Image 1: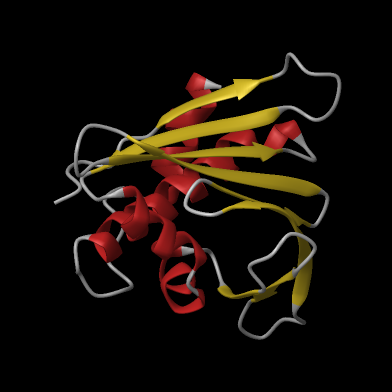
Image 2: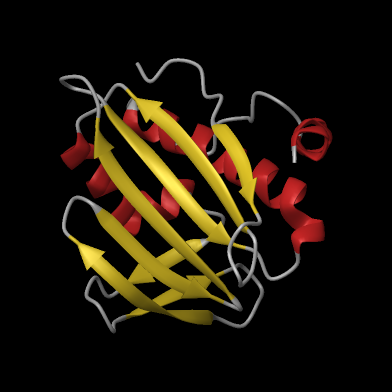
Length: 162
């Protein structure tokens, strides 16, 4: 089991560009299992905010498919197999890193540049719920699990933190 999902969340404003939302969560699954959940279209779509179609190569395209909306696309900026996946989405960059932890465990780290830092708490809350869905997927539970906490409660939590 992945255990309780309670990611470490911070906002880095030290760089010259957009502030970066930093999120880390450890899972009781191997790095290769976590990588598959991050890069397989069906698995990624099971926990990501929308359906995704990913051309897994630097320079490839990632398509974001929200029901009832026009498809959106970003560019794959970096792929280091079983370690790093970075892509653009709208005016932001998401850089996912898979790190080995103790045997049989791994850590997922997300660095999400924010176009509008006023949305930091809401973005953090959304990723919190996505990471819960990822944990459920890794643990073999069906997709679409009910979030453990309402989004507004998470927005309030991260609003105080960030």
